[in-house]
Length: 523
Ligand code: DC
Image (cartoon, rainbow, N blue to C red; front, top):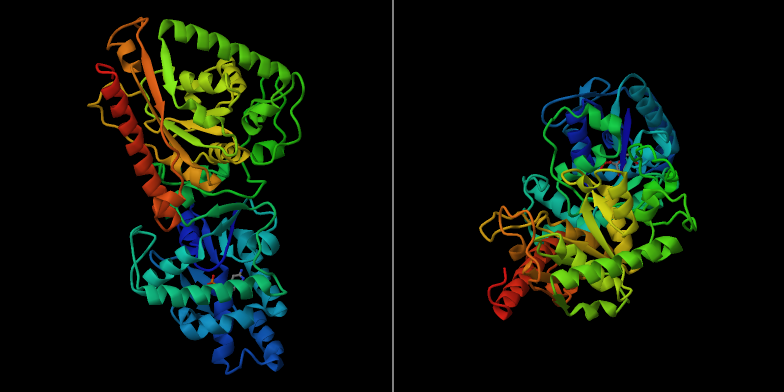
């Protein structure tokens, strides 16, 4: 097993690689420490690492260097030619000297050979700049970890001040220190990316994860979810954190094997199942599309027959529900502006909630993609039905990156996505509610606004214990005003997501209370 994690300085790759090594019992291969060791040995030999005349001598040092790691509870021990260099390689002097040393092709050749030798005898998680591209192009898992330069600078500043931003999400640091580190990081990024030998660049098949908004546990959980074998090596039985939703951009994420396609369903192509953003060519006109094809394509691309079926379902469900529970959804025409997709969020009291939104959008030709729990896919028929009506399944409690990418892709295409952040039907105001904040992250990744919506009356249709719902009772819903991320007036991606989660749900409940006031007695 080889896990390759590349990325710029401060992206969090060392912390993440260390956590994976610990949880999965892998050997941690810190390749940056190897280049730092070479630089230290050169400096100790009295060589000016900037003098081109010393290149051969530095290469000789690198070739002769015997670099070893010692796994320790805290910081991993690094030994160069038997000397404990763990602390010395992290000094400012080596920070500076390592750039020219690591840019020497002969040094890189020597280090890459050592890195491959280490991986021959052990399962490794290797982190660096060229792991997925040069050192282990056939790695089982390839990740390119990034983060906003600002987030990276803050982490480093907190670290220098003796704190740990990975453990303390709200850690702050002196602004002047952050700015100085930021300037330095940008310089190093430019150097590492611009150099001729092994420049910092993602492997084509690496999964991009933006760690700016994520905790270490969330990044680790996302990486483990990329490979079944790796996940199986995880020694912690408790799942890290529910549904981490990292930013995934690259194609070709190694996904678990898809379930065998049911008869009559085409197996999704590798590409289609890997990258929800790029539709894998048009859908087939008649039979032969897989469930995945439906999740990955725009509803307007569905085969004509499916769209006709959808129209009939909308008509029938709309007619029947309106007859049984005369309902009205105020403000739905706001969705007629198709210039962008919206993340519609709503309180959840019963089955009628999603139907109402879907039907009222459907009759107006507005695409809405409901996110539904994958537990609802109980059999082939339900899976078939949900896929035909534009549903996107989500595995709750896991790192469901596919669902995240699909929702994001839909929003970016201009489709609306419907999420019930309460997660389950709420039967009473006394119930304890956990808001699932994933909607805000999905919206932010797609740069889409959030549209709060509320519904009342559904809860009254089925009093506790009643088997049959009450008929001919009115149900009211109201669409609120779009909330854009810019309008929040908050800086920082993470802070924006948190602010959006809070404000959007407050608006949902405000709308619900307004509806209750307008229609007394309705719950
Ligand atoms: O990850 P780090 O900051 O410890 O890396 C130290 C330096 O080594 C950094 O300037 C980039 C370089 N490096 C490299 O060129 N290739 C690697 N695989 C790892 C690090």
